[in-house]
Amino acid sequence: MNFNIQSKLPQAGISIFAKMTALAQQHQAINLAQGFPDFSPPKELFDFLNEAVWSGFNQYAPMPGLLHLREQIAKRILGRYQFQADTQTEILVTAGATQAIYTIISAFVRPGDKVLIFEPAYDSYGPAVVVNGGIPVYLKLNLPDFSIPWDQLEDVLARESIKMILINNPHNPAGRILQESDVKNFEALSEKYKILMVWDEVYDMLVFDGNNHISALSYPGLMESSIVVFSMGKTLHNTGWKIGYTIAKPQLTKEISKVHQFLVFSVNTPAQYAIAKFMELQPGFINALPGFYQEKRDYFLKSMASTGLQFHPCEGSYFAIAQIPEDYKGSDVKYAEDLVQHQKVATIPVSAFYHDGYDPGLIRFCFAKTQETIDAAVSRLI
Ligand code: PMP
Ligand code: GLN
Image (tube, rainbow, N blue to C red):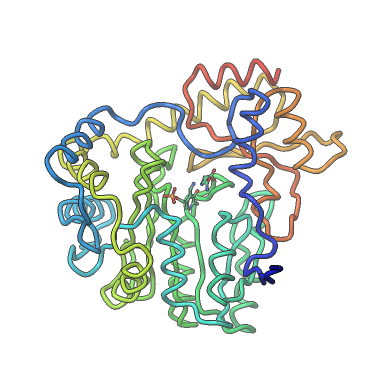
């Protein structure tokens, strides 16, 4: 039978992250492409995971997440952002930030609704909007500093009826952070145009040089129409555990939870148990992350200086982007492919973060790696 399938995502292939990781394996290259640490999560987490399964935490968790975990999340969010999240009505534990973002979009975006996405953007945003019948409206961040194009944004908001804006801060892949004035501008726009704002703050603890992460959670007016998304994978070095969460006012959390209930119902119980216990007993671990990753960033950039590659400033996240040499004639994809094949270092071409393949001549490196990995990569790039 020749069954005719009309794809909802005709353009989608395998993700650039999976593709570059596969190429890295094929060429025995050092993988500085996909964003994940190559060092271990804290060992206590393993003990707590073991304890969870042996003490009977093997069945469905409550739909919004284990209460103990929601309590630990509430404590962290209160301490850091002065947002008092109600554990019953304002926190939802998800299978990572990717599921959280999809679920939020699915809960609010109806066919024909427009969603504004700044590019470069994390690869799941656009497809999640499209699958749910929405229309992504793309706006490029200003180059070379990846700042918000405020005038263009105002034009778009005045012209089009935008239902939702997705904002990523700290930014992947740019490594830039928003200032207080930026967040206040968004607050004013959200009030003026009545727009839902989704804040992807998965790298909230990866902010450097004494800067504070400016979270939407610290702005009560903004939180009336905002949902903030976090990922445990980025804070506990365990991206494969796929635990994340959303924080939003009860009326918003209620709608997200309805979709969550029918999408996954609840997420991995032992992982939630282990993370809750770890957060309770080792609160200092997460608080030490800015210093831990700043050291990695500094070591990475200092070591990479000898390769001649020109890096953009990295204020946050665990990514740094470098300029493709001006005398290189091909695309950024070709450059990244050459690098993995000949120099045996895998990176991500930044055009992958633009829906139309726009090529700003940049590649992204992940520096969540051991010094040995960074040293080995540098020695191959010199
Ligand atoms: N948003 C951004 C900006 C990311 O970089 C990532 C993952 N690297 C995610 C969301 C997804 O996080 P998770 O792995 O928890 O799904
Ligand atoms: N977010 C990670 C990155 O930017 C990868 C996540 C994924 O592979 N989907 O590299």
